[in-house]
Amino acid sequence: MAYLPLMEKLAKQGITTVLIKMPFNLAVFNINAADKVYQKFSNITSWYIGGHSLGGAMASSYISKNPDKLNGIVLMGAYPLSNNDIPMINIYGSEDNIINKKNLELSKNKIEILGGNHGYFGNYGEQKGDGKASISREEQQDKTVSLIIQFINDTQNNNID
Image 1 (cartoon, rainbow, N blue to C red):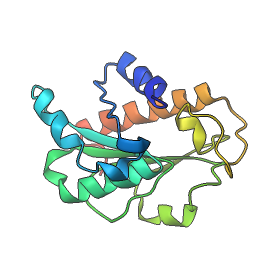
Image 2: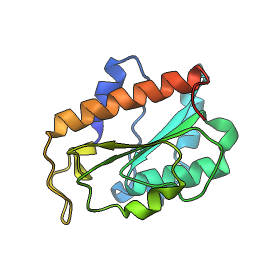
Image 3: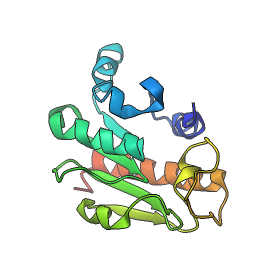
Image 4: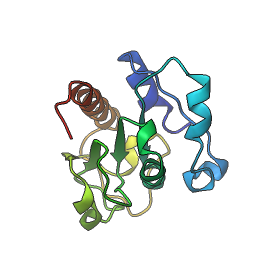
């Protein structure tokens, strides 16, 4: 439930959000979990997948095998595992000491949140080795939501690759 506050903020902006419980809280153990979601929400025609850290990497892996099912990918404190043509936004904090920023080179649409760190995308406490954020967790999540909403609007209006 560490990502529930972020998801609720998106939902309040009119975005249908689905938070999938992962075995052991690690997406690597259920990489195809999104497959079940499409059936439950068959009225939705535009899909985006996203994730934070390892969850973002697993979302990237999923999209590389299912590009026809998705309109875009949202990565937070993560990097794509492969290059693809799916519209992408990659959001990371300037104080993120967890992600290897050299791995962001495959990202087409990188946006740095000044003062943000790795752990503040979620609400799971401080993360060992992470940088000290100079903005609040709520401010980082609010900025993230604004960036995601803009990304979705841009892709729907064909203003982004």
